[in-house]
Image 1 (tube, rainbow, N blue to C red):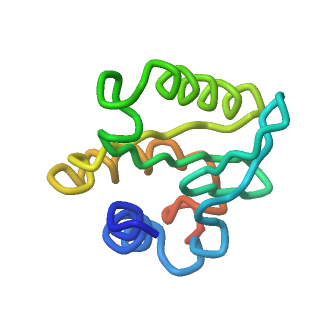
Image 2 (cartoon, rainbow, N blue to C red; image 1 turned 30 degrees about the vertical axis):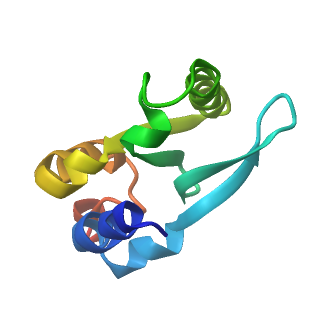
Length: 125
């Protein structure tokens, strides 16, 4: 894992959801798009209820102007492929992880709150 991905797990995902939730997360999970191209999800969180794709975006890899037009278009296509295959996509930037962890934690909690296998309040019931 790169430093941003490691920070996400150690400082947000694990403290928010606990050890049991680690069973549902898969770093760099492969998937094939509709053209047959192998792609990877930064973190796939998969339960029997839903599929969540958590993307940690760095400027050099995902920002228009920092990468070629073709690469930028390919990244958008990739995001659409995830969505069209039933993934709930959550995207965070390096700055969010570094400077605004509460924003990341809040978004993650709001996305997962209906999933009784992940949401900490629901697990305790």
